[in-house]
Image 1 (cartoon, helix red, strand yellow):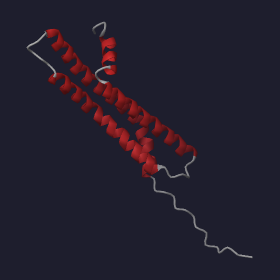
Image 2 (image 1 turned 30 degrees about the horizontal axis):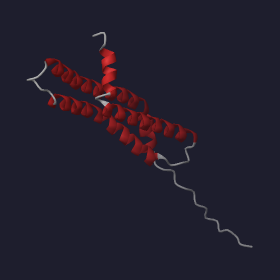
Image 3 (image 1 turned 180 degrees about the vertical axis):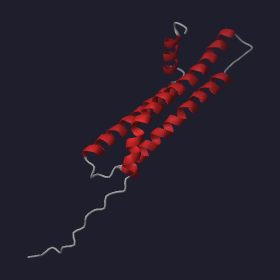
Image 4 (image 1 turned 135 degrees about the vertical axis):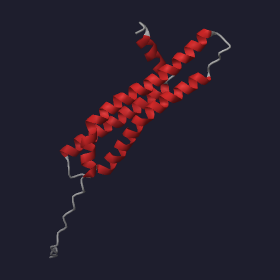
Length: 144
């Protein structure tokens, strides 16, 4: 591995691949919200939060599938900017930007897919449970 590889990768996610970083932060926020909802569900099962939890989980799993697409978008964007008739150092720079976009898309997809593996069973169990019916009293109240 090239000695400055990680430094260059980190610089690219903060410069040219910022949209991937923003998507990763948003996915992490949704993941944390799901974890908080799961904890709340365990401590207070009477509250029906399954619809909100299902929506958040759907957003999270969609974000996982979007990361490789964002990486491919960055790759295409950088390759379109290639000018093969000019300076070869610029060609190398744009080509490296294309590869880092793809790499970050894959890295974040893998990280959040692993996170998904930890929460998927609990979310599925809670969202598939039928809602408990509310008890209705059949006794008439007496008015004095």
